[in-house]
Length: 303
Image 1 (tube, helix red, strand yellow):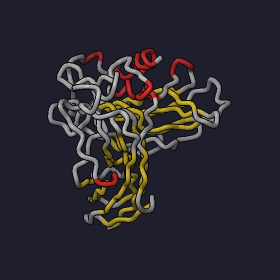
Image 2 (tube, helix red, strand yellow):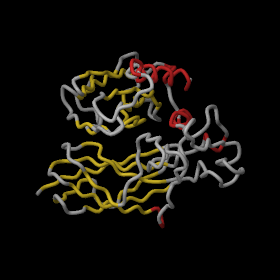
Image 3 (cartoon, rainbow, N blue to C red):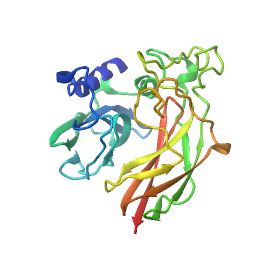
Image 4 (cartoon, rainbow, N blue to C red):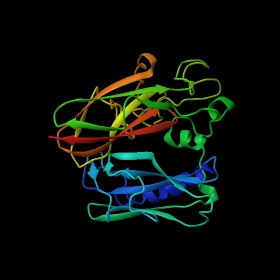
């Protein structure tokens, strides 16, 4: 099931690079919206899961909700990002649909550099995803890896300290505090099960220049999910949530990356400084190396 879904998503995204196979770009290329699959909810509804591929290694985009960034039906705003980070960003947002959705499609239309791309979400049975599919897709676990412990993994939990609507002033740091708890699964590499393993029977592929796997280790990262197109500086420097596979990158996908120590009581304190006024949505993503969870804060920034 996971393999079929991967082929479908890869076919859509990979089509962008077929004419220039073997090349990479820092800028000038478009963003491809991607349908990752759908999840069952306990109430009988379903969630359509989307991500995207920005073909650039450096260029980021800000595309407001509207004609060039819309989801239908029910849109144009269905909670999609308006700020697009470089490269592959998986499982970024979910759109809930009712249990009687049937065979209808949800279409995300996105235009960057004048190039329009679409992702089509549906409840096709072969596109159903579960946590084990997500773990495999991000490269956290070897292909086909599964055992009772890893199947029981739950995503981390984020508790934001303070309101989710905040105000700030240009140039003055805003303190963001989040408490992260986790079940300790999967175990970080080297803890139990022998060298290079994350628990009994769970092989974690060490990252290399040839095959890149995602390193394990609980961490929290803040990034801009929506904004007016201005930069936001975070202190300390945040771990990347996009798949930066380059040597030395501050990314779980980078060779030899090691997750930093979890702070006492799982309390992460970050300062965000804005250089332009406007309304921003900042997203906190907790990641245990296999599964993620998100919480958002809306910040109104004035001069």
